[in-house]
Length: 400
Image (cartoon, rainbow, N blue to C red; front, top):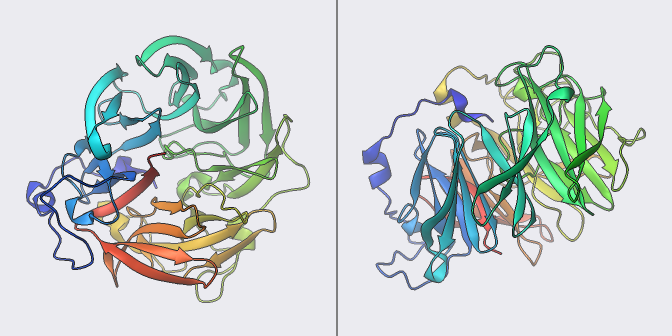
């Protein structure tokens, strides 16, 4: 879900109410506790990024930084990299004692440019992707630009810009989706993945497939629309969130080390997925970016079924509609299972994390439970509300 439609206004009175009356969470005047996640939260009109503990969600918002309506956050090398897309900058923040958000140690400014993806090669080399016609090469310690890979020759004739979006580095190669932006929202009718040699900074090949639309997203700072599982890279297309009628959503996959899509695999989600009492086959639906795979091979996401619920995008209030159902996904066998957690809003359809024991944390904003965190146990197929929040919870990024 793209946040460009949302007005940039700050409701200070709403954000000031950061103290929850929940008895489930210990409110503390002390900072003497470990924060295990980076997170983004929203007032519904603007976003804030900081670090958190699930045992202290009453403290959400303390020592956070405001980042407007569009932002991303990534953890690497004991630092947070925060992209503020409204102003066009990426800042590296240190982590202080107990993983509190520290100071800006380096910053790269790219005014007017949407850059929301970082692909780390090592401590001193990373790529930046976004609406650029290129991949920018930087030193993540200093945030200085050290080079670039020109992608303009891969731009379609009707595209305004070719945008490297979701990407993943495997065995010395960056696999990155190329989005042919004919507008901010419409991102191309065929899947395209550029395969980059990260030692030579050269394009090896571009895999193309017209069975589904452009794969990856510009709204995916965690690069979770690409999933590495069992020697395959599964690549997801949300069909431009339905802003480009006629595009086909779903998954394709590339075998690690190869440069073509697997001709035997395609999963057209809207066309093929029907779940009783949730969604009908043929109705448009889309997934939020998925988690990294659990040990049993499942990934977890939110499935937006606004068509089945007879909802549409109309204005900024539409993002508060409860249309996103937490789901478990079996990519190899092309199955989706609805989970026992209520429908969340589009604002709160990003936060999910697979814990070491296989349980899954979901950050939601539901009609029944408000802004909350749930823990789902796949062994029992049960979910439990574990914390409340005053603000709308978004990304959950483990600090490890």
